[in-house]
Image (cartoon, rainbow, N blue to C red; front, side, top):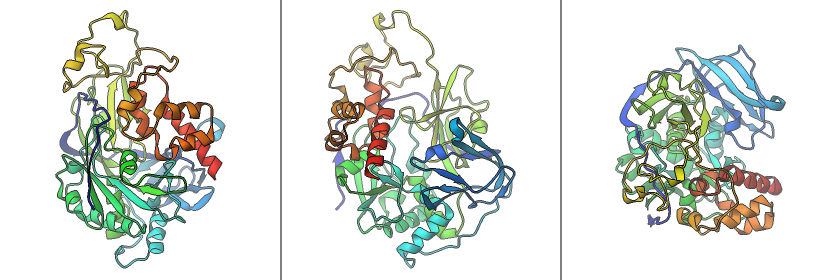
Length: 448
């Protein structure tokens, strides 16, 4: 039965630079598939530099799960296989061609295809990588059956893209994708909407349980939604799929080919004209930002300001991201910054008068305003995490790698993005998201 869930804890960070609701088509000259985007995957190459590939051509597979393929979203020529330390594979760069030749995987009706046939089509096309598993946020194991599948139809993060706008005109693809997901589980498919969701594609969706979440960020995080609807205990498996990825899956079953495109929001205070771009998954952002940003020292982020990764202005969008954020760098020291009135400084406490204007939008940079220091019991962590979890105690258990305590404190329920606000309000300046990922990797290896 549909529910309305009110989230009281959390924090909305209001920033300057939200994307205008216009879409500009760009054709990036190159795109990249980054094995580093896939947690727990050990890539084994199937191509070499100079090879021609079509949309759907396998590029690499997981060494320990050979049926999980990663395919080219668009046709082109392999430009470079970029490696890092110990020859770790970082990127496979591909020069896009003009005609986008595609491998035909043949259309299929989800209502008349079996579960195994659905899995086979998703695995062969490389789109199985769009389905991720909780706990650990790794690519789902096709040999497992989840107790439920979650799709979040809104994003509450700072400057987040508007899913109501993005889904316009894609209702058939979205519903077909939901029908495919419904066939992969014996439990429910949860489609979770926000209190301001208006898109009929979401409100009238079939074969799903539609629930409404009200409240501040992180109400749009799928981990928070799982916690309130179908909590994860030891041994449980839940799958998650992003909204645009549901459309991509639906497109495959409707048309038999891979849809290479995503709608990507370009946002941030340093963007001259923030708006949406229709580009290739993993596409280079150069054409999006060239001549469209200020001349300051800038930080380019694939994703949002809380959880995204730093990229260069000639780099590529990460596989699971649908936004690029541009903000000022914070590489400066502020003399007596703590002693100044701070009328234009953002603060989650009442340290500065800015708390009197909660709806004001701010231009924030990457400055930490201090260095790493010992933990102080402030109670701030609990104010921004809407989960029945003791966050500080969980963080400490990860630091000294107490597996039993991590398990008892609920590590199976959380992902780094769920602790992003905790990292933001942390007076100790600790890299909490990286610490939580370390804990999850310890648990994953222990349980494998």
